[in-house]
Figure (cartoon, one colour):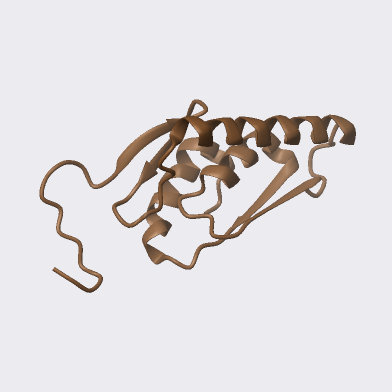
Length: 121
């Protein structure tokens, strides 16, 4: 063992968790919050704050530029950013970045699961 190599002994390639009702996949090298109950409360609070902000913006006409831009630094597999993007819907735009290339595949899987046709990862 050592270096960048991973050796799966058993089980699936990813662990899947529901965070505030949304499905997220985590690979072996991805950071995962150790206290999911508290993290889920944080996600719920962020989503509630975004809903309140969106309510102050008024309706958006189709085809307009996004009214909410979400920047997620050190985004990992995208739990926070994708959760907020799901709330914003067509009114939002997410830019999520992470230094670890281990997160790319799980992020793409999560974007498709959470955003469906909206995702452009």
